[in-house]
Image 1: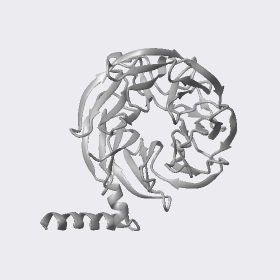
Image 2: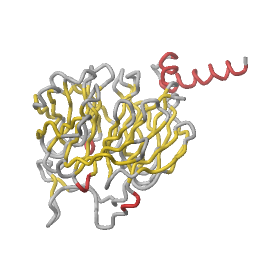
Image 3: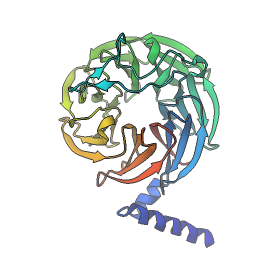
Image 4: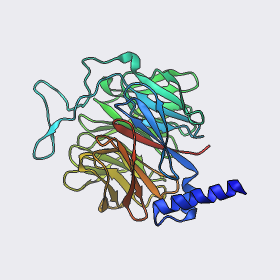
Length: 362
């Protein structure tokens, strides 16, 4: 009886915190938890999705950025890098980066004093909330994706212009694929037959066969494409171009750019995520300080949601009710109620929160 009373009190308190959220919503939220990679403090923040409280801080290594969970939700993988951070480039009146004299690109990394021994993919046990080990995954990994069966990681090696295919069981890099300069965004297409790699400098996007690991198509968008996501059926891909403030709509069969849709003035789009039902697309705008809700058919902006400073990584809860945005400069995470499309909470994270992943509660 005492346990039942405590459980109902917890639900009551959470429902009060969320305002319009009913007990069914709270129970649904109780089924998952949120992990955030903190680039500057070298750790992960674990957030309870019921009351948005921090449950744990897990040290993982240098510069954690890209973050994903295994299909069974038991393991977190996080990209680690020993390449030091340097500030983002200044922008001209058109929003394009102003490069330092002699600099060939607008990368925000500094290779001068890189610690290559720190590079790799960190492995974290979800139940134990514990860092287990680091797997070598090529130079300077930033973002990556998993095969549907969870046996392989597809990793962007930013400073050497390659993508690595890592076998998780053997912890060996099985294939190295030459792509363009500064590869960053990686995403496995629905069905798992291909994965995309976006390259910042020239806006090149590579489509790679997940069986042969050969490039089967290449196309271009405006510079600094940072991420990729897809409609659930794979018929359309979405790729933001940070420098141009655009969201590119891509035909999933022909790989043609259907439309390059403008985002609100001041947007520096970084991460794109499609709602579980495919009804909307959400894009973090970086320096714009917002998340845009976009119509997936037209690319038109339906709403602009104010969040924290320079939101980078975003993730959507499995039930489609909440969005979490990692706000780097303000060291916190915005919680957005997607029914009202308003920020309802801020959760303090580590230093420089970068990526977000949501996993089932064990």
